[in-house]
Length: 418
Image (cartoon, rainbow, N blue to C red):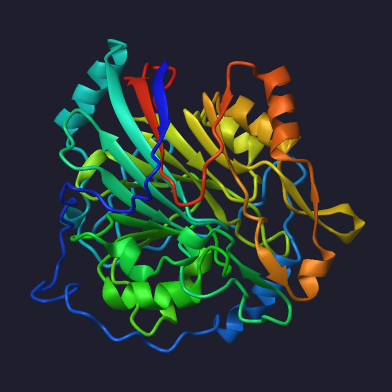
């Protein structure tokens, strides 16, 4: 479980030298995704989402009184054939809508037997994994995951990308936030897609514009409509309204997971995030990146999590990306959590590293900007963490500069397998 050297590259890198994994597409691929497409006119979020946007920016999230967001009893919806669900206590086993049983890559009985044998023997094989985490301010990231045994090229994941214009929720009079770092501000969609064949996955946590950014997604879907997407079902109205919708979208409820491409040893597991709106609304998503059943990376951009869910599933993650500075509205209403809640999250997930994100550090204007306040600092969080969990390291990212971690992980034991 130990981890090796940690290094932050000093040159901005959003490209990789190795070819990406080629996704399987069910239609004729000739020329698709490779031709330059003229940028559509930027869109504002659909009118049907305006109330949700106002509720979200006002921080109207809540829980069920037991430390977790309430979950609506809704079934997952899939529009993709590029992800499969693996039946297990955490995997729904559902296939993409409209697909046959052969289109989902479920394990055979012999594979399940082999997996069971491997678990019963409690293998302790160690495997090296390299993570490169590039923070693009607000909630945007580029992750590169290199599994050094059996994976030729690093997996490249875009997370909540926002690289076209400011963050204004379609209502700049209410809030208008601009990134600060010149290197990051200069980035565009072409930078996210370079080099060919482009990223392997687009991961979206929430349905609001600071995560599901309409102007960025409009350009991204026009240039790469076959880019696989994993997101919350709450984002479906936004994604469906794009002029060129993504063709390969998988909607995950908390507790469900999807394999990334053809590499079934790498999965994305959805966890419960904040509820933006009334208590009966479906929660937004956080995610854990699993590798051979081992939690490598956890991400949720509000530091709002379902304690009972994490405890019941005995989930863990080597690296936790989370806000650590609270963002508050008047009357001490929490919009984004952090501080002691971030310490508790690291304890629950038995993390080795915490990577703080500063999603409130923007040049902001509008009515809401005058109402927002902050509580705590990264330094005060570090002091809390050092006292409670002295073995956990804090690695503060520099926007636009890849933060590289070399991890040694073990094969899952019976207790760790999920």
